[in-house]
Length: 198
Ligand code: GDP
Image (tube, rainbow, N blue to C red; front, top):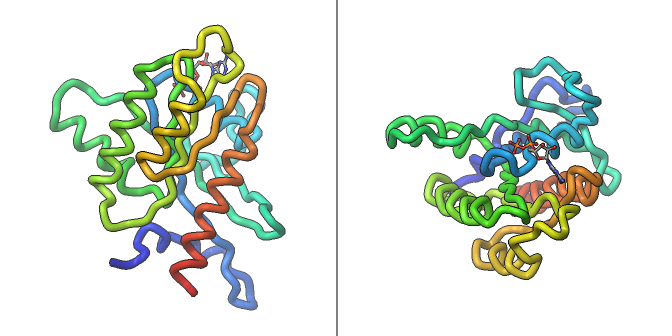
């Protein structure tokens, strides 16, 4: 079972020396209102509602320099809550679940329901991409809302251990840990790349 998840690289950014700039698709998942759009806007450095690259409604591209190496992330914020009908649910969800080279599953620490949804998404993702070792980061957002917290950091961490993914808490409002989140995604992608190409 190959590295299908990592195979989607750009071929328009290779330079004359033939070295390839890596381009990866990152998909954000999570309940409505947990802060996906806020996180991706910070990633893209979007002031207000200006879109930096006309790549499509909810897709943002940015090249990050992490550990002295450049990597381009194409971050997709296209996740829609499932309609009631099962067929529809499967159709729209499977699309998002199939295109990512990495996933960011977001919940709000102020919303236990969104934490439970995150677990369900992780299970769905595992089912859809069974044989692939795709990076998944579990993100507990809105840590600034201290008094409204319903999910402890320990619970988040434990969930990540059970589901075999990375974990970070963020506050999009305070811009806390957001850069670290996306740098973590890049490092996880590189670990897989270097592992599969070694
Ligand atoms: P999405 O539906 O998952 O894309 O969530 P949005 O990014 O649209 O955020 C939903 C609401 O939560 C908005 O009013 C945001 O301003 C707010 N929000 C997002 N992240 C944070 C955060 O870290 N802290 C606080 N206090 N509010 C946040």
